[in-house]
Image (tube, rainbow, N blue to C red; front, top):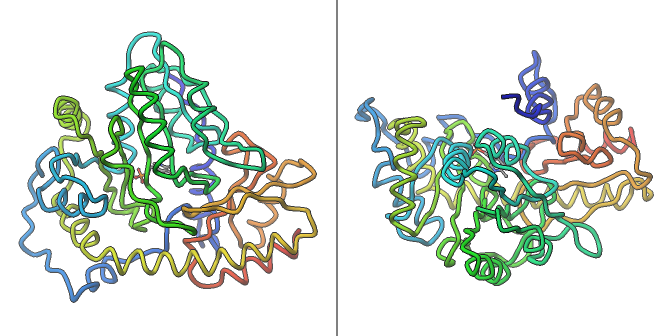
Length: 364
Ligand SMILES: Cc1ncc(COP(=O)(O)O)c(C=O)c1O
């Protein structure tokens, strides 16, 4: 099987893992980075000496599931741990797979939705993340994309790459409409709980909603490769745990211990994220205002990324390549099938964001 070319990860890897790496990373969608020492020191320290290096339970240890449940204000029994949200997605799509079935996904979207659907033998139908005035997540176009062969609808809120958010009442209405057709709603919450307006509760607990999330994005710890599914239905949960046994057997007990510690210290981690993202977003907003109309955008309401576009409709790749030569990495919109756009991550680069924007302004 030929999976689609993952242009985004190729672009990020080519620059972030270069020697030397790019000076300013405004392309990644994670929060500010942590070393093991920085993480372990939060909350007065962490001793890993007694961790037994066997397998963990396939659904994850009780400790890590309890810590995840607290983040989503849900029942620990509903939590199934996975290797990143990536494995959560792979498990859910594998279990949704049927001949001639389709899933409904956003456009633009995190590229693995389409790639993993194809890997599971599922067709995709896209709905536009678009309102009257720029980007928006509305139930109407989502429901319009559903057919009799739809087995799952995927919603990502806060949304990558646009930063738009669907409020909980709208998620509940969408999930209820889908329930009438026996179609579950998968909510990808990897950027929860980073919001720039009113705080949104997690979608966990809404009837007919399955949540997937991770420690990679809002929690800023992609190197822990820790994700999870929140599924209320015990039968479907059993099938997911069984799938995990086939896919990766279990998580690492060492990473589960670090993940539990991180989740218990989430106020510090999320506080740092909110501070970096808020400060950088204000600087970015000023740059767009001062771009003389060259760049347009929908200001993000949550998450770590936004998706401005060249107002004259030009392909952004030559600009992104020139900016990378000047030491600043953003992601070309063609990585998401929208060449006139640029994805800018504003939550990862803690120091020097203003300098990076000065270089961007000079090139603009
Ligand atoms: C929206 C979204 N969902 C899921 C993932 C998967 O992340 P991970 O496997 O690191 O948890 C990503 C990664 O970029 C993402 O952007």
